[in-house]
Length: 279
Ligand SMILES: O=C(O)CCC(=O)C(=O)O
Ligand SMILES: [Fe+2]
Image (cartoon, rainbow, N blue to C red; front, side, top):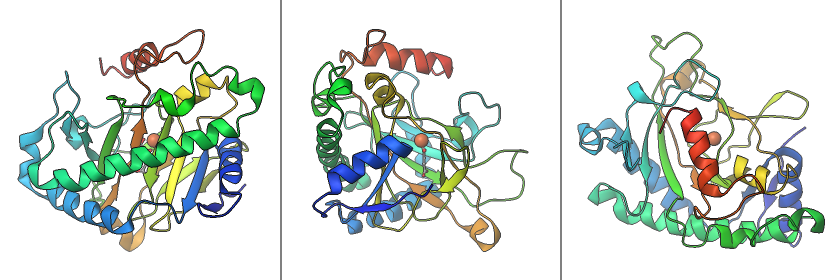
């Protein structure tokens, strides 16, 4: 299996994109409307932020989950016992954002939300009728004006050689939310697990955008769209000295949205956060 990049502007892009999501849990788009320059500026200015001491003034709070998460408390993927090699910052529009970084990151948050809404309408349009009948409301409406959508700026530091045995930049996991939008990072490393049980590279040409299905859409579609395992592997050779920055936007439905007979978005999220020991 191979992941093909789909041209957003091609006449059949919506259909091919949804087919890729259904087959692999992932879809990669080129020629999409998000400006490369904005993403590049964000990578540069947040790299500088992670290099500065200022980040410690924005330490996350367990109540609101916005702010800076240092490597020492960084995530351990579900079912793993070694921490990932990463630090990150959680942006919610209502949350704390360093003043000088606000304009670009909020502009990105808004543009990426707009694109996500369009892509959810593509997904809705190409969902078979018997599956779409399970959606409690149209998919784009699930995220409309949602305060739950989270933008994470990740910094994977250069490898120092003293990392914990078995630790990688991001251990295999699935995303909890509806869908995730992720501009190709400034360095490779993202891999997805195929149905055949093989790890393959996600195309990482700078300027393309990667979309993946999260557990909530898998739940809402009765398993039609798979929430696929993915991971970020450690760099080798000269790339070891390089930082990697990435920018996933986790689209979360409004809390009261019904996902299935078993869950609302809120009850689903709480169950998962409890499993991870985060609440
Ligand atoms: O850094 C990446 O490319 C992916 C990050 C990721 O999968 C996550 O934070 O959930
Ligand atoms: Fe992920």
